[in-house]
Image (cartoon, rainbow, N blue to C red; front, top):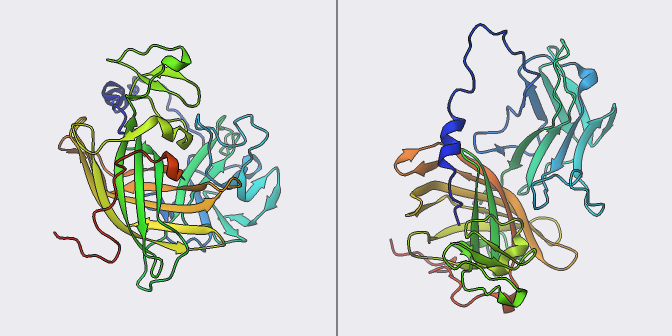
Length: 367
């Protein structure tokens, strides 16, 4: 489901935030960026050194940084911010309190860039992030009091050399967090059909909405049928149909919606490749989708995902989402980027009519 767009908030956000009426110029602390990451949030060469650029020289004594696998809880907090002792950051590289692990970093002569030669090649598929810790200051002492989190991913694309795969056909739910050009969430059901001999696949991607037929009365709740639906996870409650999914564990509360004003379903080709043991990298050829209400079009949707089994045997995926353009009505809003989180749906919990691809990986569709 495409969450309702906060049109008023979006309009206000693009208005000038202040007027220059003779006030002293604001000297911002050093802003970090990733110059080797493209407009889709993708780093082309995961084995190359990773560079952080700053818009002005920094004070090295104030700089601490981590390169991590981007993982968050249901409220969007990184694993060292969620207060849960059972979760921790998956750190690839760090320079914190003058201690360095995972590689070697150095500044350029101007102290406007910091380049990290990492011990290990960055993983392909999962969403990654550079986290610049609070306290980073320029030479005049103007400092950040919050983290700067720069998300990116290392891309995987289907090559010309087919490779066998152990990945099996599966049905999943996906939680897509779109960061820009606006903040919204998309929920999708996905049915992947794979050719084990080549890794080629076809996927059917279908809108997922909260299921209006779920009854909350066994939980002692009476929902307003015109404005609310029953949510059973993480705790029973009557909620607006557009309420965002907190985690993919809420999949039982969702139903596939192919038609009507809010429904859509699209087919995309792709491939999957075995990585480490029981780990797979997925990519798809760009695909388009058009929603009637709200009138939203997304052109060139691309997913790069790493799949693996967790300790309970659940197949999970995480990675990056991008699109060449996002349209509100006929108005283009530019490149869309974000993160995607997935899990498989147990066979006995797949709801009737779950959409499947109209053709197989080896078939040529009728255009």
